[in-house]
Length: 529
Image (cartoon, rainbow, N blue to C red; front, side, top):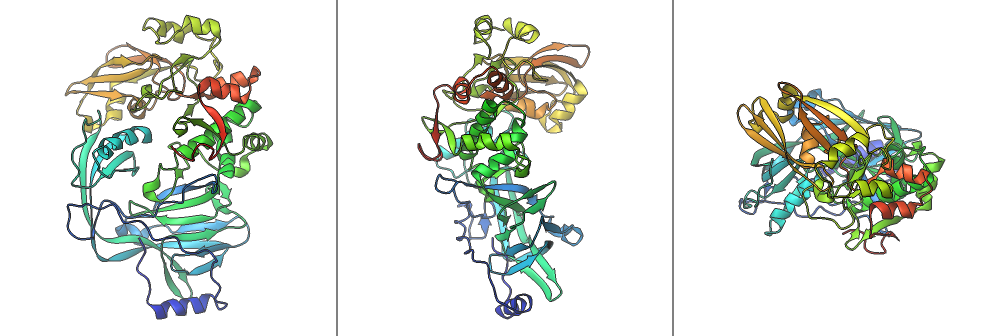
């Protein structure tokens, strides 16, 4: 949404005072945003499903640039504007250049942007149906398909947890996923939060998108980033600081934080391919807010690319613009820290159909595979967890783990909305072919609930994985013995490091964890599924 423009005379006066040379940035304004998602059943154009936001330019082989949010949901509520801390942007060296959507242009080594209340020309009603929460984007995307299959426009958003939004008149999705709620939101909004520069010559309101150039780098938190950048008004009514980062530079900020910089070259190269493939495949993850990806664990951890050493840069260069391809384009390049000795199928981690290259298998040498075939027998799981040290990657620090859960911890994790009361019993209802828990029942003094798939670890956050056995350990206490760290599907980083140390090549490691896929240049088989 564009903020209310100042009158022409004031605009000309501000530009004359601040820029006697009359120079302007040479970037052209972004195209206007697409028509906002609206509630077709509500009268008038002032009823929206969410604030309209322009889509980011797609990442393609011809334009391999990602829009990554270094920070999201910036800004206070309108009533908190007077006491809110300003947004400070500092250059690592030299000047920052700012240009807003109206062409106002400023330069300084530090820009202090203050929040402002922007009164709308007319009140706007935000109305939508909300399905959630979901533990992951993957599960939210599966649920969004229930609405899309019947022709309903659905958007995936993450105000806190993942949610699916649909117009207020949308029918109930069927079947309603376990553990999620269908609610509604209706709010009349008369103002939004904007940004302004306070100069000696007067206050200047800034309109989204706000472009920021930083030839010497932008300091943000503990890092420095090259940009260019945009400050974007998002679908929630807040703002996002987005870096437009070339794909290969993005990998320099991802690979060392995901697998470490001191691992063998083949493991580094495999991680570079996967991080690149994952980014290309998931570039629609935050499209509702006008960018591709976040910089935290809900995407891939991305921080200062300058931290990449020579080995990381060499791994990225050796695999330049290479992605793993399946029948439908770039694959679901999911990966994790340790699979505990047995790889998981896609439906063991998330709601969704089986994926041909994400299958369960014992992850070790031939004798280990013969001893622990999948589907893993229930009686074999305790043995695997007790003496499965022959698996690849068994030296990972969380290859085996133990946890103790108390009724009080479980009650706090579930919260009052589950309606369970004081937990009295835990029971595994179903396991997948790799032995992972698919459904965990919690019985309580006031009711019961079932945690499924990724919701198990999202709720019981102390659990490193869902590969565990469960036993009572006293009144209101349960002991869990488990293996691995993460969802278990795709590449095990610990396994890849082990295999690379044994002389396996990058291609062989990737074929091991993603059978039937091929390594191709970006764009050779399409840029996205």
